[in-house]
Length: 506
Ligand code: NAI
Image (tube, rainbow, N blue to C red; front, side, top):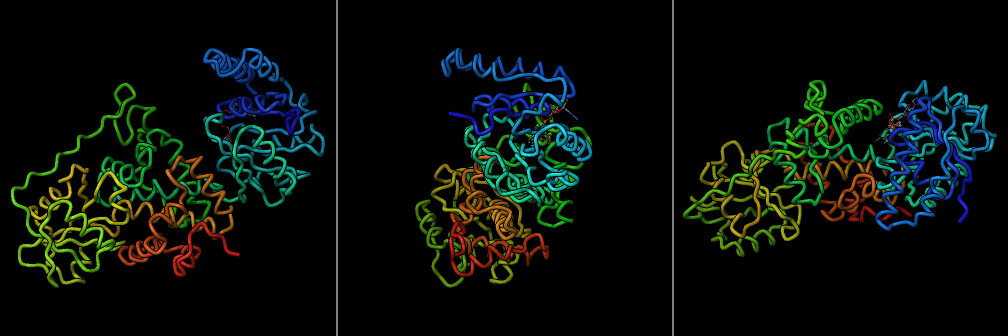
């Protein structure tokens, strides 16, 4: 197969440049590498050769194929050597002034038809292209690290980028074995924008003293199916990367409250506790392995009180059937008896408010998160209010742990951990659709491939029920009085008429 671009140039032979060089050579292009540091280029050639030799040793490719790939790479000491390139991909230092200078110089080297693209992750493509003679041939081509394994690339259309430039990049991305997604030139593009929901809301929960970071990680992995919890993820990525991205997206959107970063990461970052790479972040690492706090066993309770379930509990029928399976004595009266454990299952509201509004005895009231289908989760989450008696808390904990399922008990907040984080993710994703940054389908693809979520954010919203997500957000907005939780109009419209979040408007 003939590559869409026979000869391409890659400027910057660092982590990203060499990854892009690998998949470009594999796609059949001649790859000309240029770096202001010549050692970076020779090191890249060595590393890539070693990479292909490894694939040969594993029997994944033939030695002749590896040799063909190697022969497609060349190192160049002058930018002028790149004059024959049909495409030049820039992957140099993340500085607007330096990138602009480079593109201005490149325009005087290549033909007017050559595409010039940037792998920037946080700068505006339009801003980099400003001042170019032909900004229509300049686009963002945003790969993820490590490039050969992260099979998605964002094709970013700046204000002046032509549709033909984006089409050519889309074809080439597919030849490289990657899935292209189309994004408008907006802060964080798709992946780094959609990813704001996960970490920032989890950080807020920690900052409110609702649950510690290890508990939040456990809950989100066991209830939603994330491979890593938000704190494990931040430790892995490194706060030197994650915290500036949080600040950058927040500030580029003129302090939009949905993206507000946290003083917790600001402080860890300032203190050099960056995560796994420095041996300590949220977790402490010994020989690269996180020291996880031990989860205490469920309390032993000899006699369990009868249980009364609020008529307003979400998924009430499922909750009652679960209680039956767990062998609870269920009260069916209009109100709880004097010694009953009183269960509520709100969406977005805190347990305190529910106890007050429903005129329940707060000392015996415990909440359970029923946003997710219990049968599909590996953990149940309970919440107390400040007046909940220890014996009632322990009774609820012991009861819900009876079948061996893990149980976490957290403090009262508007929305449980899963409700808060999932609703925030779905809301931000909905706002990406509202702003027309990309199509709903490309959003789902970008997030599942770029962030490794178990489902795309819109599918996650459908799974929980768009009306449930809306209820969580409306109620949290009431509890917190914070516009951070205002539902995106896109979500409101679909939730109101019971439309699937993946259904596009005609
Ligand atoms: P890096 O620091 O590993 O490599 C950058 C390379 O560019 C270095 O070899 C450096 O010598 C060279 N360079 C710097 N200024 C130059 C210039 N004026 N002319 C020629 N070469 C120059 O950086 P990395 O991580 O590969 O990032 C490159 C770009 O990709 C940045 O824009 C970054 O934001 C973006 N990016 C990085 C990702 C990551 O996870 N590392 C992910 C996605 C995008």
